[in-house]
Amino acid sequence: MHDLIIRGGTVIDGTGAPAIKADVAINGSVISAIGDNLGPAREEIDATGLLVTPGWVDIHAHYDGQLTWDPYVTPAGWSGTTTVVVGNCGVGFAPVRPDQHDFLIQLMEGVEDIPGAALAEGISWEWETFPEYMDALERRSFAIDIGTQVPHGAVRAYVMGEDANVKEAGLDDIQKMADIVKEGLEAGALGFSTSRTTLHRAKDGQVVPGTYAASDELFEIGRTLGQVGHGVFQLAGDYVPEEYEIGWMKALSREVNKRVLFSMVQSAGDPDQWRRLLQAAEEDAAEGGQLTPMIAPRPVGLLLGFESSVHPFLLHPGFVALHGLSVDERRAALRTPEVRESILNDAPDFSKADGLLAMFTVGFEQMFPLGEKPNYEPAPEESIAARAEKKGCTPQELLYDIMTSETGNLIYLPMLGYVDRNLDATSELMRHPNSIYGLADGGAHCGLISDASIPTFLLTHWARDRTRGARIPIEELVENQTRRTAECYGLNDRGVIAVGMKADINVIDFDNLEIHEPKMTYDLPAEGKRFLQKITGYHATLCSGQVIYRDGAPTGNLPGKLIRGPQAAANLNQAYETGLVS
Image (tube, rainbow, N blue to C red; front, side):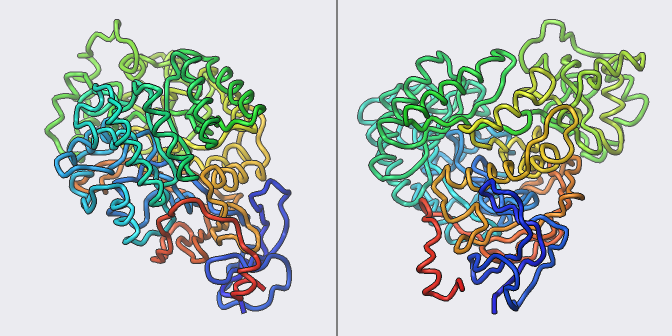
C-alpha cells in the first residue's frame, strides 16, 4: 500500500530522457516506484492527459525577508517551484547588528525594489549571526524548501560598519569576514554571494558593500568554500575590466575547486560581451574549471504602468499633482479628460535624457504593450513607436490610453536580453551546455518586474507557443530547471523523478497552461505593493510527497523545510531497508 500514486501521466523525469507513460508512487517524502500496476494507494491523483515533472528548482530568488512572514513564499509555488535559493547578489538580512536593521532594509529596497516599509513591518528580527538567521527559518514551516547563501553586503556591514560600501577592507577585516562566511557555510548555507555591478545601489544611491572589493578579499572569503567542502560563489557583475574580472573568477574556482556562478545577460551597451563570457566559460570547462554563467530565459524587462515604480509620466507635473490621492482615487482621476489633458500637455523636456531615464520616458521603440495574454517576444512593428505612427497619434497619447485601460494596461520595456528584438540570442544561451537557468528574481523588483513565472514560461513559450524562432524540446527545458539547477547547488536528492528521490512533483495540464497578465497588489506588510501573476494549468504540486497546491489553490500543507548544506543522492539500499521503497 503506497501513500500516493500519480496514475496515467506522461512522465518527463528531469534527466533529458524522452517522456514516457508511467505511474509514480510515493511513500513518505520519497518516490517509491515508477511503472505500471503499482498496486493500491491511500490517495491517488489522476494524471491522464497531463504531464508529470519534477518540481522546479529556482536558484535565484530574493525572498530573504518574506520568509519570516509568508509560509507559502508566494508566488513561487504558483508556478510549480518546490525549492528556492535566496541570499543572491550580495544582499540579505544576516548577519546584522541590532542598530543595522534599517541599513540592510534600505540596501535591499534599493537593489531589489522591495518596499522598505513592508520589510520594516514584516521582518521579525530574531537573529544577529547568520547561523541564528538559519535557526529562525528552521523554526518555521513552509510550503516549499528553502536554501540560503551568505550575502557579502551584510557581512561587510557587520564587520566594517555602515560605510562598508566605501571603505577598503584591511587584513583584519578580511579575516573577520571570512570567519563569518565559514560559520554560515558550516551551519548549512549553500554558498556565498556578492555584487560587482554599479546597477545595484542602495536606496541612498551607494553601491552594494563589496562592489569594488579587491581580489585578496574575494579570495580569502572564497577559500572558506574549500575549507568547509561545499558551496557556490555567486555574483552579479559588469565584468569590467573584463580580462581582470574573468581572470580572478577562474583562478578562484580552480584554487578552491568550487563553482563560480556569474549572472550573464545580453546588454545593449556591449551586445557581444555575452559571447566572450560564454567562450571564457567554455575554455574554463575544457580545462576542468567550474566557471558557470547563469542566464535568464526571457528578457529582463520592466513593467510600466501608472502604479509601477517608474513609468513614462512619472515626472509630468499633472501626475505629480495626484500623489496625495489614494490608489482608487488616482485610478479614477487618470481616466478623466481633464487629467489626461493636463498630463499630456505639460511634459518635462526629456530631449537630453540618457540612461534609464531616457528608456522609460522616451524609449518608445523599446516599449511594447504587454497585453492581456503577455507577449514576451514582441516584434519591432508592435512597439509603441510603430503603433503610434500607424495610428496617427503621439507615442505619449497611445501610452496613456493603454495605461488607463481596465485590462492589458501594462507596457513592457525589455532592458536586457532583447538587443536584436527577438529571443534568438537567449535561445543560444539556454541551449549552451555550460549555462544554468536562473535570474527569475522571485520576491524582488516588486514594483517593476514579475519574473517568478519564468519556470512556467519555459513550457508555455519555449516548448509550445513560440512563433518567431525555433522551440526547445520540453525534456531539455525540464532538465535544465530541475536536475541541473539542483545539482548546481549540490541538491542531489531532488530534480529527477526516480525511485528513492525526493517526491517534489508537478502535475501539469500542458495544453491549458497559461501565464496571465501581472496585476499590482497591495498585500505585503504595511500595504506594500508588488506585481503578482496568476498561473493556471498546474493540476497539482507536491513537495516532499505532500500536495501543496491543487489547481492553483494552496492545500494548507506545509512540508517545506530549510535546507542545510548539500543533499546526498538517493540511497536506495537505505530506502529499501526502511520500507519506503518496494
